[in-house]
Image (cartoon, rainbow, N blue to C red; front, side, top):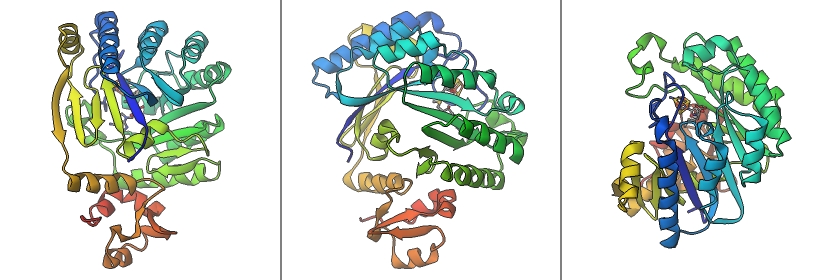
Length: 359
Ligand SMILES: C[S@@+](CC[C@H](N)C(=O)[O-])C[C@H]1O[C@@H](n2cnc3c(N)ncnc32)[C@H](O)[C@@H]1O
Ligand code: SF4
């Protein structure tokens, strides 16, 4: 298990709902911002008083954290006790990033920025239901650098309706030319209850997505961006600490509506709407909505399912000899570990189903 402690902060506001997005975010509740941030500060103070450990990583996600005034966001972060060298990330929309905002974040202790680029091709962005102008990405990265951030991430998505192979090559080339220390590239997934879910003709094609995965991995592997989890590439030393904590079943607290938390096998999540969250915290009650406790066997299995997706891989005995033979194109041995090959990363879910239960 990861030895650190993570903190997730959820900002549930967006300017517009993207067609593919199933996150608990709202476009009509910005008037709650101030009360919501006050409730989060109260909730954090209570957890600190209840001996919350110092955070080794903090991730402010959403939603769109850049819709909240920077100084107010920083006042929430200021409540969180940090371990020395803690990673503090804020997810940002390229349309909202200004130099002043980035300087405020930096001065307020943020040391990593994650930008939702998605694509640099205008018709693909439109197809995803995104509003930002690709030129803002170049400007945003310049501001991030000028404000003194050494670490930042760019999120991109492949497989939108109408995205050709050359559109994707352009996005990958444009992103590469910005020389980012970290990139997350996600295959577009159809989530229930999204605008995309009801539009069958716009659903991604598996073969097209596999081709695009190979393209991104081949290009990044020549530019010093190393794949360290199926959808994540980083220059050495820029791997995301917060995600690594999730992948190693670390403990973390979640503040804000719909935020998830985990402590030694017990997982819980907060109520979904910001108004309910504000109401409960203000009344001195817990905002927890539900929880589950994993038995030891399930935890071990999940540990392997998460690890097999990373470059660290799983111990040799995690697969039967027969399965290792049968999946020789998908798995390879590195010292005493078994890791996915590139072909294996494309079929990770199927491979993970063959993990042996009792390791
Ligand atoms: C929690 S979202 C929020 C980030 C920010 N609001 C934005 O959209 O730029 C984090 C990332 O998840 C990815 N994502 C969200 N929904 C997705 C989906 N249905 N399929 C693939 N990637 C998705 C996007 O790349 C997005 O940048
Ligand atoms: S993808 Fe990001 S910007 Fe779009 S609705 Fe979801 S959280 Fe908001």
